[in-house]
Image 1 (cartoon, one colour):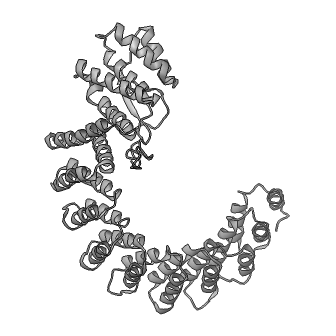
Image 2 (cartoon, rainbow, N blue to C red; image 1 turned 180 degrees about the vertical axis):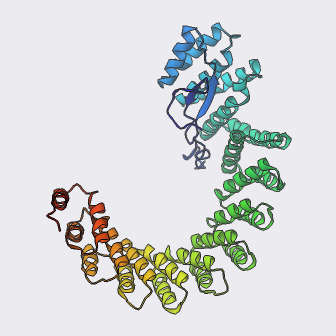
Image 3 (tube, rainbow, N blue to C red; image 1 turned 90 degrees about the horizontal axis):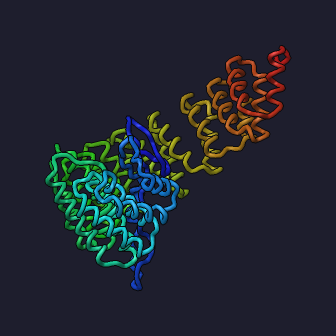
Length: 476
């Protein structure tokens, strides 16, 4: 959908009035009990776009109301649309006028204006039930108005939102095809209901997840959305439902999605289930998702599981390398020690490259020094040395150390890595001085050309001076 501010867009012969959809409606305490509704609709910020006839109505009152709406003068817009509708209840733009008035009232955000917005929407349903705006955009707006009132403690609005969730479920069961907009509204209603009344919402979520037809794209999409809603609301029952999805949903994409989200639901049962995926499944994507989720769990047992996978020679190499990345995300010194020891013990080049990439995530002096040691070790394979040199710079090795190592190196591939690393620090005087020196004095033509190329991105006057010298033949 379009992502622009309120205004008019012309596309494919249609004028589209584009309005920001309501912001997140929850996130504040709503009663003396301190009950929180935590951003129920935060994920739904796409715009509402309603197509209007390319020929604008000639009525100046309607045009004035539209201008006020586009300008963000919502109070004035609501008054003008009200006046237009009272004069023209049967006009071609009558349904749109009611919808836009309701939206303008909603934007006022006071309780009185929200209740008036509901009244205008009821009138829209009653008098113009066959209008496109009543069938689509108005229903979405109704959900946002009810949610805003529910935040203010309106139990009736909360009940209406809950009823809407049931209705949407029934509608989905009757449809042969699903629309993304409808799916978003259903998800918003489910999410809001989970926050207001989890006991009422969980049976609906279970019903959505029970629709396990592998060929029904609508059911598959709604299962993915339901899994997301569950993961936002932690609890033993939500976790148990997610685990059932992981074990039994017939669609791999839904299972992988559920596995990823389990990472945010700590607990021994969750960890045991994730470990079971690693040992029992042969699906590499599921195993990777399980590793990521275990990494999010944290704790000694989770660390042990991930390290065991990294060391397990019978595991797929790609999975072992991914496990190294999960280990590298930890900040403990024990993680770095484990990676360094695994590098020493391993003879597989790909795995050792994985260790280098993983440990570089630590970005500390000890790590940078270790990587630089590998880069300067002539007994190591050139490919590993080159990778280590690049990662040492990423881990934070000082520019002076990099510059000093350049003159000690023989291999052009390693020198090129130093040039690349220094060129990313041209605002550092030490780095700039060294790249200038390489561009002026390096014997290898290709390396000089690379240094010149990177220097061209600096606006330091010494760079321009050097380039002039080279052009005039004075830089040789």
